[in-house]
Image (tube, rainbow, N blue to C red; front, side, top):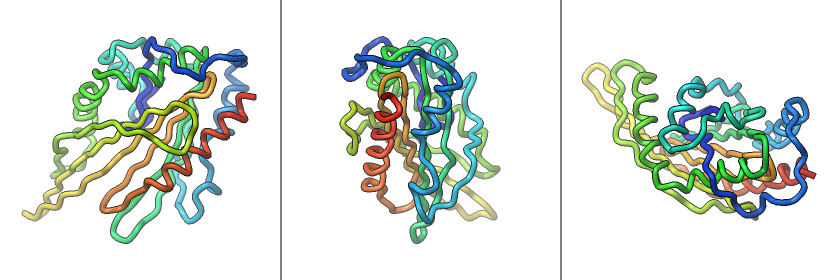
Length: 231
């Protein structure tokens, strides 16, 4: 399972979360792609936000490294299709917030539940800190420096499905003409599964803006769509 953004983990563990049993359609790349597209966020979900194609370069080898770090199989072994929404951005005063989603269809519901369970592993936090530091620093513009990355867990709201939340704090200091400015990007990952679908909501904010209410609303929306797509 590819890591489509620094705060989207696609790791597979071995535990099975509750809610993964029952009748689940078998894997088919064409129908799975359609199902994933039906679940993802669309422009009408976020009126007033600007939509841009999601072209995150991280994935492939980076996803495999994260999986290996956490002691999980390579994403390529279990993924069927992976579909991302556009990235939706809006300014809030001097701050900015972004929302995007990703749906990965894997081979079985057990593998989907294990994917989500992996995010509960203690090793994941250390893996994120080390791997993201290595990935992100080279991508920053000249004169910018990434500070220590903070990773913590939180309990997502908005859906009845067992969900995992990870919150990253990414401090970046930029220096130009002898003057320095510091900005902190907060990135939330909410992930849960419904059948074979692993659903992720990515929320990124800069400045003093709290996305908690909108984050909860969109989590619930994705959960309802995933439930309908499974039926």
